[in-house]
Image (cartoon, rainbow, N blue to C red; front, top):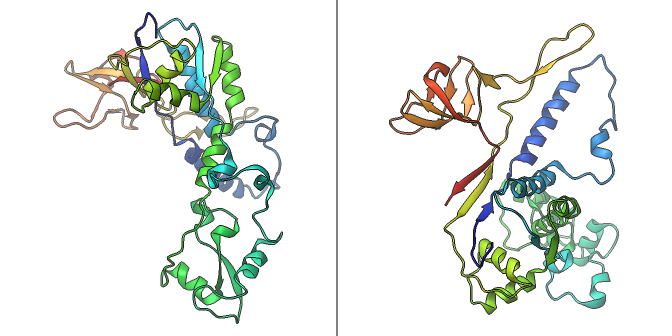
Amino acid sequence: MAGGKVLLSAEIRHRRDVKEKMTTRRMHRQSRRARKWYRPCRFQNRAASKRSRRLPPSIRTNVEEVIRVVRQLPLRIGKIVIEDVQVDIARLNDPTLRGSRYQDPTRLDENLRIACLMRDRYTCRHCGTRKGRLEAYHIVYRQHGGKDTLDNLLTLCEACHDQIHAGAIKLTVTGVSGHLDQIAQRTMQGKTYLYAALRHLAPLTLYYGYETATWRKHQSLEKAHDIDALCLATYDTGEVIIPSRLNFYDIGFRPRQVRRRFHDLPRKGIGRVPYQRYAELAGFRKGDIVRVKGRWIKQVHAIYADGRQAFQRATGEPPSAKPKDCRLLERGRTVVWTRK
């Protein structure tokens, strides 16, 4: 924004596959180590995972995506303005929370199971029996984001509990999900790292969400990401600028790695040498923009073992081609700008 006009606006689409890829890699590592019967198990040997102020890879990736986009902007940056949303995790679960209620415990006892049974008077909430083994049932499963609080627990007998998991019984009660808690915690993590990096690029100013909303409503503007960004940029000056999407982009990210990493056979004095299979073919790499047979402009999505480059399938266009039929137009980029 400059001269009373919007020069460039964009919306960032963060990657959402990092955590899944890290989980898959951990599974392969565990499987590989389990086969090394000749070597004793090693624990606490992940120095990178234990170091102080470490960010989880999924959060660090999203933070660095923002930094990369700012550095690639084709405009001179005079200042950076950020909406610093302060998230109250406790009030996400109860908007009426005030004062000393922040200190009120949500459990009746240290043993949450016993507290649940005490609340329900040691009675199965489905069949009403008081005999046999009673269990605390998570209404919203923990694997689905359910919380370990009394509001999400129900007393059931062992038979009813088994029938629910088997699908024979369906409960109509609702529990409490911890999904909002996870979002809030994710939002709070990585802020210090992001702000420190951006301050090296330009002066940084922080505002709060309610300030953005007040200025947007004062101008009777619609709720949108680029509109909020415009209100942030003009909040301190009070300048009124007409929103424009003439130069609006959708920013996505493409991973650089082609396939999983392989290892060569052990070599004397070196050990197992890692290499990236199918990472390059005749000078072409994944993500490169090429002209195929002088007609079609395609992007290399994969490199096959038979020496062909694969493209996104489209009717009437080749799904793959040999390197001799391709001409390089542009090297692949990990940050993809798409004009909307």
